[in-house]
Figure 1 (cartoon, rainbow, N blue to C red):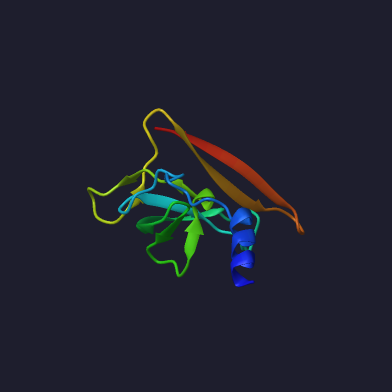
Figure 2: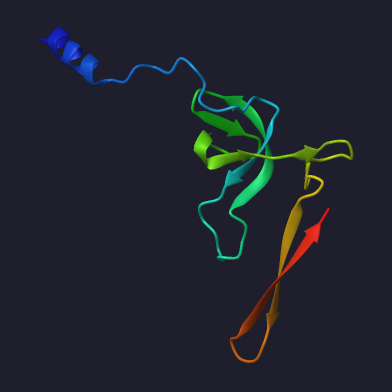
Length: 117
């Protein structure tokens, strides 16, 4: 009876992945998506974090307690020449900075400054 159940369950199981579905390798730096944000103007991603271990679909990051699915991270460009990891804005691209100025009452003025490199 156990063999019959085992064979029936084999049909419903997925085949193991043979190829890795993400490009991340140990030593890479990535941004990790943050799901709990205190404020809507806070960044969605934290990091950069260094990849310590990988599987076919997940990565384990330095400073994090659990594995993260590869769809919740994105690669970070970092400059390691001057000490710790610092995100780099590529030449010719723009970086945005938001400024919040309180007005009267509960009104706020949001303005965006764009910097070119």
